[in-house]
Length: 129
Image 1 (cartoon, rainbow, N blue to C red):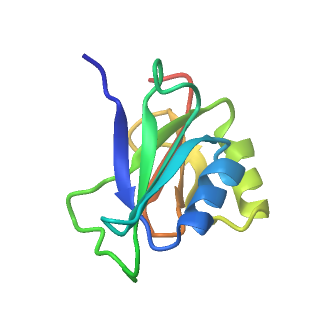
Image 2 (tube, rainbow, N blue to C red):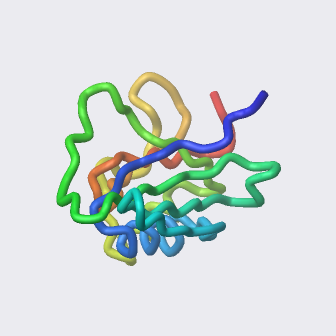
Image 3 (cartoon, one colour):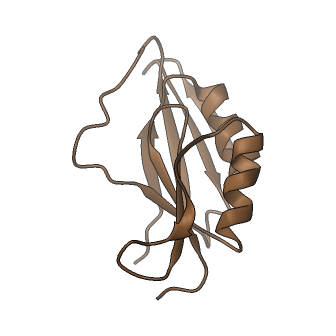
């Protein structure tokens, strides 16, 4: 067994795809419209879905906004250098929720961004401590 994908509902599919590809370096793996269901799915990731988990963005046609809720935490993405990744994201206009730095309860370097729909993205160093 393995995790295939995580799904997020988005308000503006083009804006969300741009964030995940340009700011976070993912690749758009596939995208398909479902006219009968009035929605579009886009799958993004860091490698082929056959061997890597993906992020599924769901755009329900005509839906203006979503309540993220209190149960969702964040999506974690491993990067080589959190400080560099946060600075790059800032230059591309991303919203930084927490600057890069050590965790308050440890030494792992983390930083947080928000995607265009308000979902939090944690960037963390490859060394887990």
